[in-house]
Length: 267
Ligand SMILES: [Zn+2]
Image (cartoon, rainbow, N blue to C red; front, side):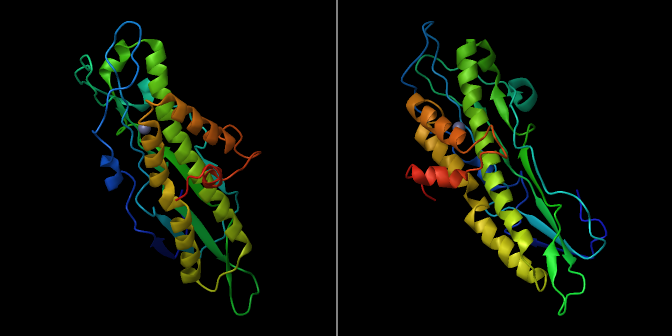
């Protein structure tokens, strides 16, 4: 994806590229044993997850000029099922002993760089620009940075599934926030802009109102569920994520931040 024939490029936001964000080192440690262990007396497991959101405000690249690109805006990667083998690098770690609490996995998912194009509105005087309907927002999962402890494999299926489910929800949250961002971006198509700077202002407003909250939502999810240990909280988040319509990308659009707000979780 690129702004072909673009004559100028600008960036908005703090510009931290995905993968270099300090967010990637959040919430390690401070783990406590879970309240349950399975019938075979297996040691407790934990999952530590961090979702990278590509920096506080992310990156939006906008281009002006060149031939208008005909196309449709796309939200890519909204639905994705994470797979232990394909999406997580195995890391050798000692299995937890009795009563011991160790990191089990970490997920890096977020909203990738967003690219938009401006085009001159024909015959406009003074000249004004509008966004071309070929904006692309990608939900990304970094399968090279995301990892799983190898000892997970020796755990019963139910344990492995519970851990993966918690990780999956991190991806789903990234996807839903990405969709919130995408839908707001679509609204901007109706506007006209005097220049690129005017568009940048709108994009920055969007960044700070939605995109920059992605990490805060991920952190709250981990705090509430204690990284998936608290099943009642996990269930609660599952319900909120489903209410926002993770399985119905275009038919049941309810902004995730709205669903969370209704449950008293505000950012
Ligand atoms: Zn987590």
